[in-house]
Image (cartoon, rainbow, N blue to C red; front, side):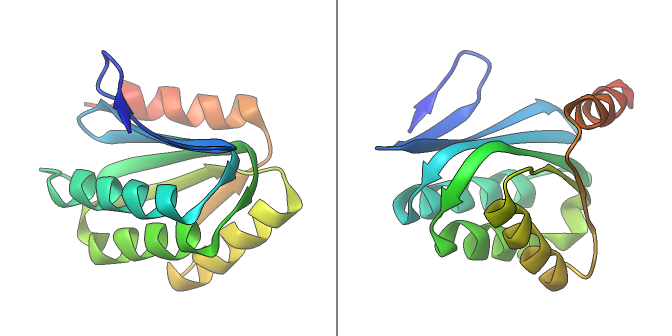
Length: 137
């Protein structure tokens, strides 16, 4: 794991990465790219749990999964568990997923989250939603 100057936490493996950053008090941005393995999934989910459990108010989560093409099932399962365990601190779950396998995984997670994931395949729409959340107090 590495931490950039803005406080983003990045978890890397041989063929991919997951990144998590609190970009505003009520906004967490997540990006995943390549092929993310189980070890990254475990470390990422722990960081997500920590970020959500320490939130003083519900946060909007934005998941940029457009560059993710494959992942170990632990990535989805453990990330979903972190969201469920901290449900009171989750205001929204917005995803940008375009690859078929990843969209199927988002759909499976959405069942566990009772339909609260909103996916788009449009980067401009996704970025507009992020900007709107960042502008809120």
